[in-house]
Amino acid sequence: MKQISLLTAACMMQLVVQAQSFTLTGQVEGKPSGYIYLNYPGSDGNYRMDSAKLSEGRFTFNGNIDGPSMSGLSLERPSPMSFDDDIASLFLEPGAMTASLKKGHLKEAVLKGSKAQDDMELLNAARKPVMTGLAPLSATYNRLNLAYIAARKAKKDSATLAGMLDELEEVKGKMEPYYEKMEVIDKDFIEKHPASYASAYLLRFRISGMPLAEAEACYNRMPPALQQSSFGREIKKEVDGLRSGSPGSEAFVFSKTDINGQPLSLQDFKGRYVLIDFWASWCVPCRKGNPHLKELYAKYKGKGLEIIGISDDDSRPEEWKKAVSQDGIGIWKHVLRGLDMQKRQKKEPNPEDISDRYGIHSLPTKILIDPKGMIVGRYGGGGENDEAMDKKLAEVFGN
Image (cartoon, rainbow, N blue to C red):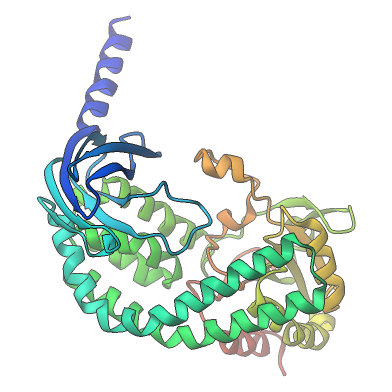
């Protein structure tokens, strides 16, 4: 019993260390009364929404956080489907902070008392010219995306939906140069500020698209305290996932029911090269790449190549089957990834999710597995491009 009590005490001490209090006071110009809303991750890691009543524009929030955390302040309760709410993104820290805001311009909020926020301001200043150019394109994309979602709910015909997707893809293509510039700015900031929580915040979004060696190097440059923070733990998880789906790792052996209701196991393909294609019916680049994938399959199938499509359409199985039929890719095997949104929202492990097992965060991504079950190629998120894939297949099978 004594050992159990000591263990319990140790756990409680750890929780006390992690749960750090903060106070945020401030004033909103142009909004003397009403409410203001704060969305932030609590000490348990789950996001929560708090509200405070405005008195002559002044407000106070008190809470607990697990170290520096990104939060959002808004004058209206944020909607999950709203893309243009006026929200102030602020880096809360344990301790006392003050915020100055102006109604209609919350994005320009000033926060004092947070070193992480000071670092974010440096980053935002470097990003500003790119963001200015990106803003109108982003607004157009969000408007078209909402229209597409509404059209899908209204069950518009496939030709109409395809045309709307083409519009979205055209705008996305115009946005890509800005995203590339942003990536350069972000990576430069991360390299120059390895001990900053702002860098750790950036890495959470950037690391899954990095080659494994670069991702590991970024994580290893972080000081131990930052590695042990909530951001650091999430980054470590991303690195481990990327490693499990990169060349040199043994491929995770999954078993699923395929699109035709038949059992399928990766184990059954031992002795052959297998190209796993992570895709989705709604992913325009994925589907635009299908004709080339069909060419590769026709070219190398007789030499020992197999393809398994793993779709992100767990919640839309009919759309998945329709896309397979429309694109004529039923010539190879197809399964769903095994996404369980309830478990994901509760942060529960899901061993049935194939994408997680291979560290997949962007589509399309392809994984090449050799006859011994080892990963020898990654093409897409965190890997090489399709030209490198073509070269590798030609090297393996001969032209």
